[in-house]
Amino acid sequence: MLKKILSVLLVVMLVAGLAACGQQAQPTGPDQSTPTQSTPSESTQPKKNEGKLVVGFAQIGQESGWRDAETWSILNAAEEMGVDLKFSDGQQKQENQIKAIRTFIQQGVDVIGVAPVVETGWETVFKEAKEAGIPIVLVDRRAAVSEDLYATFIGSDFILEGQNACKEMARLLNGKGNIVELQGTVGASAATDRMKGFAEELKNYPDMKIIASQSGDFTRAKGKEVMEAFLKAYPGEIHGVYAHNDDMALGAIEAIKDAGLKPGVDIKIVSIDGVKAIFEAMVAGEANVTVECNPLLGPQFFQVCKDLKEGKEVPKWVKSEEGIYRQETAAEDIKNRKY
Ligand code: AHR
Image (spheres, rainbow, N blue to C red):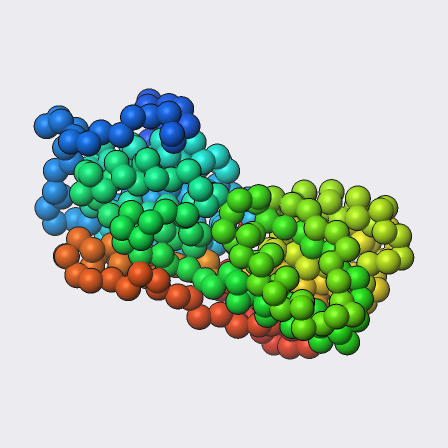
């Protein structure tokens, strides 16, 4: 027990220290405004790390339970696999993630991992990493850059998740009804593709339509706020909520209850992620389906980093295996959830 408490404390200290390290005095300003160094000078030229694998990871922030699980997976895997990890929390800001990447380049890490908060605006800093000979690994979200600017993408098929969410909604509504959509962060690949997948699949159900769609930024608080507005704008007209993540669905559930309605019954709830809290809501009969999106990417991430350091070929997409979980089996399924 004591060993467990000590190791948790160690991880907390590590996150705090490394987060600070990733945000230290580095060139500031948005991506495009910082000139690209074509040939790094001798003093900034990263040195090859002998022995231990040194990895920088620019995390998005802490917007959801899913994100916390991903961070935990990365910290834990680094400890278990003996990786020297430099971790930075971008606090939901792309400029912080870009600063962290520049810090990692100056520190001469072997590989840089990044979960891009939004898809665009990465070319300049990725080119800087390439010129310094440091491969970029995209973790869980994609960046809109040419394929030569990153080594691999590790993560889910967000379009498929959106399609599966729509099929589940059609099953719950018998193919007929009005849906409101809670989008993730505007410009994030997870939001764009989940919206696209759902919309594509929706074409197969002419009696089902999205009557309102707005961003809740992947957070519970904003999910609740947006749902309150939807309930006011469409009283008695909403049959289903499609949320791009579980946290926003949990916020929507609160709003529906506050409005005197029964979530999961009066209004069906379909979301994406598979965090424990949504399983609890399903067990309570307040949510209907979650389409899984796996955040436990740490072991795969460091294996890829190791392979890259050893000069091995890596696939351009390391795809996650994911399931679909329904209210009917939630009480059993929750026992096996790891996040
Ligand atoms: O990029 C994955 C998404 O980001 C998750 O679905 C969401 O919960 C998170 O914040």
